[in-house]
Image (cartoon, rainbow, N blue to C red):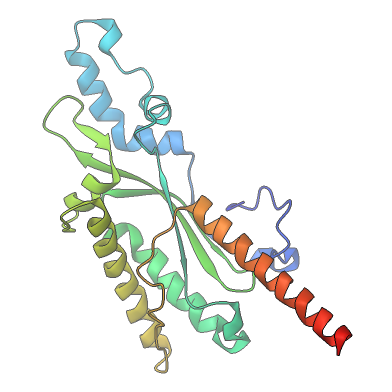
Length: 226
């Protein structure tokens, strides 16, 4: 979906505008793992006297571990499609600035795929990254989102607060770009501190669509009854 290899079942995509999409980075996740963890895995294996303790494929090891997420996805947008065509261009510019600075601002979140979708009603970014941190025990570099954020200097007494503080930090940076490009920009705080994983967001979006359809159906019935 992100790289437009498969557009089946998504009515929101205007294929005639797909050439406007910006693909910042498209790297296979296994290559990303090799870049980030390759040296650490090699150093770890060199110390192992028993073959059964060696790591043959760190990506596969993480992928099969139910307690660890091999990667995360961040979806970034400003406002909604209801804002109108007059806001499209400055939104694109603000998102572009955010995208180009994301990796430098988040050194422990290895980006391996990043795209801006401009072929839907509201421009938005999809950023896929591998969060990692350096460890003093065992494998010298590992996957973990909370520890990756801490390694970047984000503070929080628990994972939830840690994620909230990082999200606020990133939102503020995007908001600064928006204000530079649109002096009238005013961020709506409603729901701004809610965090959803991708499946949750999709379910939420589908429920909103169902409600809109139900509303239209009821309004049609009311007109008929009148």
